[in-house]
Length: 478
Image (cartoon, rainbow, N blue to C red):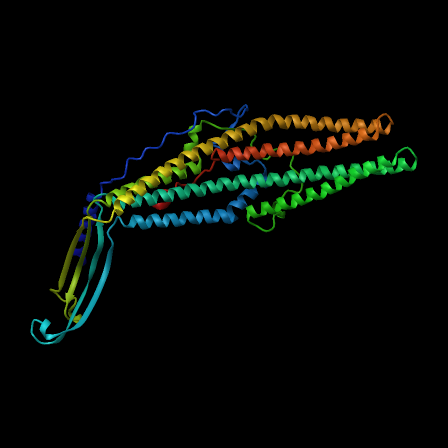
C-alpha cells in the first residue's frame, strides 16, 4: 500500500510544480530616486574612511565605549524585541510557503449507524459499520494563477523588511550608546572644569577677605567674589546631576544595572571615534540604509499582493484524495482485497461576490501606491539626514578649532588679569569678567567638541553604518 502511495505523491508534486508557474503580480521596478546624485557639501578630510567598509568596531576607537556597545547589543530590551520580530516574520513566511506544497496526512475513520428499514436495501432495519484507514491529500490548491505563490512572496518580503528593520535597530542602538556615552563624558568634563573653577574662586574669595581686613578691598568686592563662588558651587551641583542622569540613560541603553565596572576611571584624552567618514554617492544609500531596504521590501510585498488579488478573479482548483483500506469490519480492515482510493478534484469559478474581488484589487493597488510614497519619503529623509550630518561634521570641526583657541586665549587673559589685579593695576571688576569669560569659553569648547563626535556618530548612522553579517536573511530560511 505504501509503495503505491509514493507514485501518487510524486505525481501531485510534479503536477503542482508544472501548473504553478503563472503569476499575475506586476513586474517589479524600483521607483526612481527622488534625490540628487551628489551631496550639497561633502565633509573634508585627507583620507576619510568609507562607511561602506567601516564597521562599528573600527569606527569606535575607545576600548571602554566599544565594550559598552557590545553589552548593549547583548542586553538591550528594545533590540531583543526587534530580533524576536524577525523570528515571528520568518515563521509567518514558512506558514505561507507551506501552502505551495501538498499536505499529506494519515487518516483513520470509523462509523457505526442504525439504518431504518425503508432506507436499507434489504428492507430491514439494522446497524451498519464502516472503517477506513489510509493516507490522504487534503484540499491542495493547484496554483494556476499564482495566488498562493503571490501570498508566499508577499510574506517573504515582509520577513526581509523585518530583518532590515532589526538591522537598522542595531545600528541605531550603536549610535545611541555612543551619543549617550559622549553626553556623560561631556558632563564629566564640565564637572571637572567647574570644580577647578570653584576651587579658584574660593581662593580668590579668601584673598578678598584678607584684603578687606587690610582695608584694600571693599564690601562690593567681597559680595562680587562671594556671588561668583556660590554660582560655581551651584553649577557644580547641576553638573553632578547631569553626570548621574547621563549615566542612568546609558545604563538603560546598555541594559545592565551596574555600569561602574565598565566605565573608565579617568577621562580619555584621545578622540573616541574615527574622525572622518567618506559619504560616498547618494545612490549607495539605496543598498546600505536598512530603513530604505525595509521600505523597498514593503513595496515588493504590496506588489506581490496585487498578484494575489488579481488571481481571485480566476478559477481555483483544489484536490482531495485518499489511498488506503476500507472494510465493514475493523478486524478485516487490512486484509487482502480491501484496498480503496478516492480522488475529488474541485473547481470554483467566481461569478458574483458583491464587488469584493474588485475592491480587494483596488485596495492592493492603493496600498502599493502608499508603499511607493513611503519608499520615496524614506529616501528623501535619508538624504536630508546625511546632508545635515555632513554639514554638522564640516562646520563643527572648524568651530571646535576656534573654540579651543578662544578657551586658551581666555585662560591666558584671566591669568594676566589676576596678575594685574594683584599688582593693583586693574580693578576687581575686570578680573571677575575675565573669570566669567574663561569659564564660559571652556564649557563652550567642551560642548562643541562633544557635538562634533556626536555628529560623527549621527553620520555613521545616517550612512547606514557598517554591519558585517555572517549570513544573509535568505540563508536563515533554508
